[in-house]
Image 1 (tube, one colour):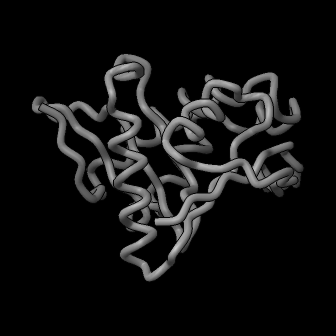
Image 2 (cartoon, rainbow, N blue to C red; image 1 turned 180 degrees about the vertical axis):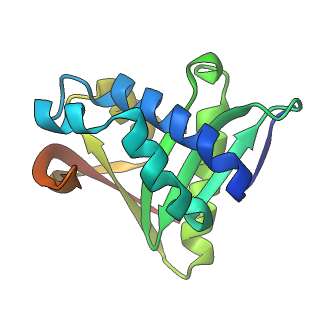
Image 3 (cartoon, rainbow, N blue to C red; image 1 turned 60 degrees about the vertical axis):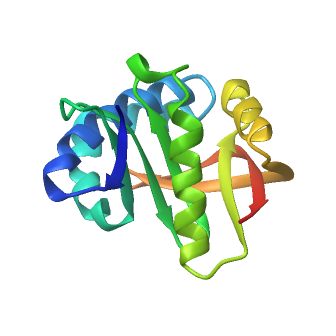
Amino acid sequence: MTSIRPAGDADMAAVADLWHEGWHDAHAGHVPDGLTAARTLAAFHERTPRRVADTAVAVAEDGELLGFVMVVGDEVEQVFVGRAARGTGLAPLLLAEAERRVAAGGHVSAWLAVVTGNARARAFYEKQGWTDSGDLPYEVTAAGQKWTSPCRRYVKSV
């Protein structure tokens, strides 16, 4: 049985590990090479502890982290499922939790950015009722440099 709950400080190292793995699975070859190089495991471990309040985690009965979402305001910033849990139906549950968090924050719609080349994620969001509303040049700062990632903006009423 998997449960979804608010993250705690003790979860954040595992979140960083999963985020690093999932980010590289989804973004390599689709974002500027310099950004990919800047997204080191150490960089994820440095930034993740500050995000505990934004994060909900999915955990197995044995406590293993299976996935997580991060929500800030009306943006679903991160949705990642670990490799072992992909295809199990966990991603829709995590996305529903993110949508619930956006609605609980008083917003009537949510948005998220998907790297243009990530066809798998784009198909997933569309299947979950999200609408592609167009190009979104997403500004990213990492390792003291700025990049623009080619993204699509997806929206959904919540």
